[in-house]
Image (tube, rainbow, N blue to C red; front, side):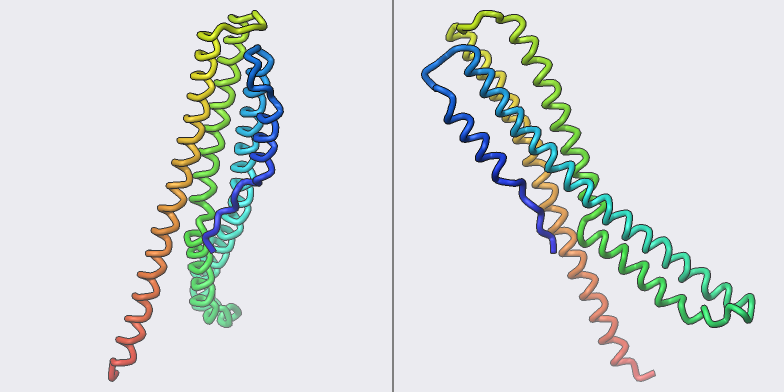
Amino acid sequence: MFAKTPPKPESFKVFLDALKSINSNRHDKQSLIRIVEEVSTLMQSNIDFYSTLSTRHTSRAKKTRWIAIGFGTIGVLAPLLGGINEYFKGLVGWGYPALAIAGAAMLADRSFGYTRGHIRYVIARLELKHLLTNFQVQWSMWLANHPENTLAPEQLKEAEAFLQKFVDTAHEIVKAETAAWGIAVVEDMQELKNLIGQNAKAKTDDSKDPG
């Protein structure tokens, strides 16, 4: 019910295979460039993953909102029209069922996290895309400032620190989104539990009412 589709493992496997193909004994610029390219490709796959999730949740959120708006409008107007004109008298009985359907649609959106999930995924995708774009710009400038093919140990350490910072920042973005997803699931489950408890208590009170 609250499952979050994981990213395809193939992209990470391709990344690991590509790293294995790079000769670790070579400390030239081409090896470093290959590593950066593979890391960037893996990052792009994560961006595409969040884009897919965002599109999916957007579609479902729109459907539930339209259902809620449509049936909510019917639920409000049906009794009014029935009281105004005899021709619409048959619509009076549709008021409560229509409102119930509208409420169920809103509950489904909240329970499955369609709207909130869409917002989270859009934010994560934009942050990762900004991070990748900024990294690629800075990396291009770094390469322009180091035109030599063979890099000194100090230059390698500088490049490695630059790349490590990029990877760590991306990890923090993904971790923060996943943590927000987990918190949302717990909150939604607790809300459903409270709602079910309230309904059960109301039915019990009604059954005890002698009137």
